[in-house]
Picture 1 (tube, helix red, strand yellow):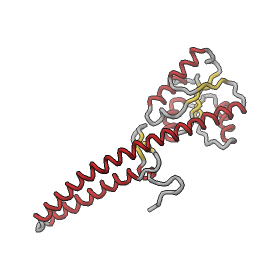
Picture 2: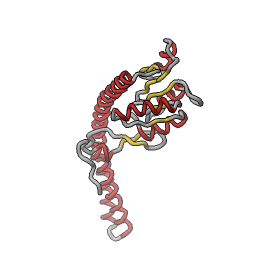
Picture 3: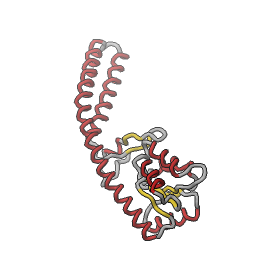
Picture 4: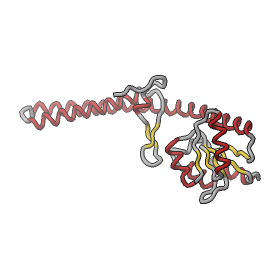
Length: 224
């Protein structure tokens, strides 16, 4: 994703990236950068330092404050911030590097490819740690919740036997059993997670996409 108010430069960078097979989103208005980033979840953000309304530092701080976006690497592009304090200012705010304008096409490609490769490796390791943590949690939940569910179901069955002549009581028992099985199924699916796939829940909050996370990456999900 490229955030630059200079449309000519933006078009040039996007043209280069598209020619190398990168799927590129271009944003000229920095105030919409967060909204676009949340929607498209880019693997890399190239962010111009000097823009109207919101400067590069401001956008960077907003990106890093968002749970849905803070792990996306951000590279600042500038023609002016060449002093050590300027560079440190961006790096301490969470940027991974600087690109100095004017940019040569070959250097630009090499740097972008390198950033994407490093991010992919980091993401893979992060996903592995998250997956291990989720599986361990799922094992604990499976044991704890299933014990509680069994108690609920047995209590409901006992109540239904005592109220066998009450159609409403029997119906309530069937509803309880149905929901107990649904909860048990969700917990069981947590143990089957094969990868970490997230989806936007509310605003910029992320949650685990359980349906996609239990699907083998090499096999599309079954459609009902």
